[in-house]
Image 1 (cartoon, rainbow, N blue to C red):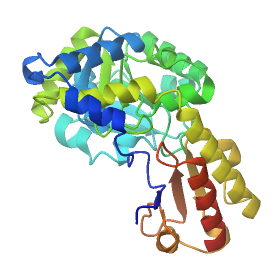
Image 2: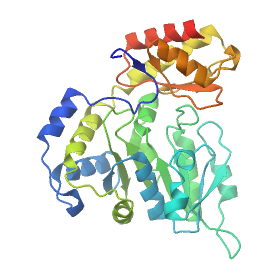
Image 3: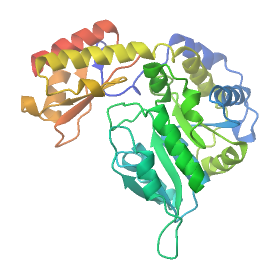
Image 4: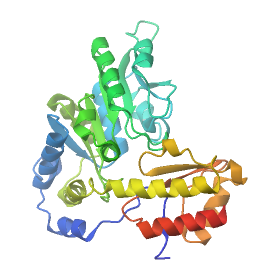
Length: 344
């Protein structure tokens, strides 16, 4: 069906005509050898935008997180993170399998692990205990409903980590959604982190690619790890060209996605006030509690698909995530809401 409304994720967007033209016309070289001019320009542009010394283009957000963690932390050390961290639950156990790192979780309040939690949890390591080598935060936070990590708390976490000599990694897959939601420039959050990664292929709408930003030294080590993980790409300017278009044209329009998510949330709350936490809908995600309707996520997924609306569902789940993006218009949002109300 060509008129499907796809709310599964903001990763499902298709390249715009401008992206396709840029890809077709991209000047390329061999990026493994460092001579792809389009990749190099995108790396320089990204580093400058986020106030970092250097940047590295990688195929995916998962790889971005992994090369940063690996560059910051030696095997056998621990990473402190939110108990719902993306790299803990949704990156195939890569930090353990490839990097030999332990994840030590802290109970999150929304998107946040607090500076007080971090201060209490950081440990220097001994013959009995692992050393805390990284504190990781996520912005926006996927499992917390796309919530924004408040800047002041990020600064407080960074200050504690500086006092303890522990670097901070920022999983900024949807960092520009945080910027769009608050008006705070992304580089302000970037300043709280020793390394960060962000995705071109989520809200910004590119078909592939993420960026790592840090110091030249950390990026050099991340480059080595990218090679080890199979992420060295040759004429990568073809995809970097689309990513550049996404960065240049995709940031400002994120507010439209947020408005559409808000419309979905408010419409569903009108149907049943307990199914949506309106205060938690800050960006482009709406988590819907299905218990008031006595339906499972799988049941709802199948019913919605019959009416042309796509969602993701996990067996046994009693909630569903709806994600708005560039390929979901205002009209699509209204139609999806009408279908959701009818089915629920």
